[in-house]
Amino acid sequence: MTSPRAELTPQMEHYTFLLEDQPYIGFFQYGNEHKPAFNTDNHGFRISRGPAGELASVASERRPGPVRLLAGSSTVFGVGATSDAGTMPSRLWARYAPRQPWLNFAGQSHNSAQELVLFALFAHLVPEVEEIVLFSGINNLVLSRLPAEKQGRHGAFFECGPGNGDQTVPTAAERIAHAAELTLRHLKAVHLLARALDASLTFVLQPLASWVREEPAPQEKLLFEELDQISNFPRLHNDIAPMHVGKQYARELQDGCDEIGIRFLDMNAVLADAAKPDEWLFVDRVHCVDRGYDLIARLLAECLGLG
Image (cartoon, rainbow, N blue to C red; front, side, top):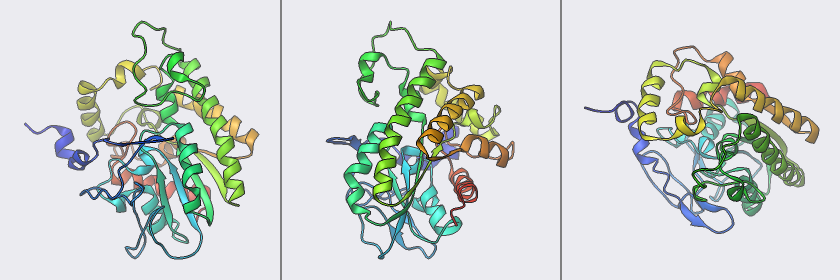
């Protein structure tokens, strides 16, 4: 019998999360990967597609002039999209905000410290940047469950190893506070880099399915139930899954962004207002199908006045 995941989202077989060990950022996509669902340039950045089918990426040759960056982790990379054309940077460039190319500046499984280091290491490849949208926030909250010895000075990261099995798990409130502090601390440094490039910066809290609507769409329900049988997300993260946790996290980030002077958008609230109750958006609780990425790209363009 075919599983819902294999039947509904066959493209997921190409998203294996096999990443290359990299100094300074820990891990990143392999360069020059060419799979049915995605392609990367020689440094491992995903390719974006424009309105006439033209291609661009952080490390590739492209037309002269300024670009805009959508930065973040695996959701920005576009895990779940059936092709490069289905990612948020591609949808922004091809349809919703086509004035300049949108480049995919994402590293899968990165926390906020890795996002900052990635930007610092590769900013020389994008000397003319008009707009930076950092679409992030979930990974820091997920990693906040790990014990203090894994957090270090700049936060835990994926693949840093499990904690002691008998450690005290932080409360949801403690996890929110820790994740928000790390996110805002590293965002201040991104803000300085953006100012040096004379680029505007917006932080967008990425959506989590249970923060958008309490009852998933029928296809999502089937996919989530299958994933719950093989993953530890419910056991480890049920405390941060409720909608009120997402709202509190968004308030913490909003207050911090206001203090720094960075524009903030909670995509959970915006998506909740725009999505139909039975509209299939998510391939898992964090990543989307093509329809979800397209809708989010449209909402980003509308809410941020990207044009």
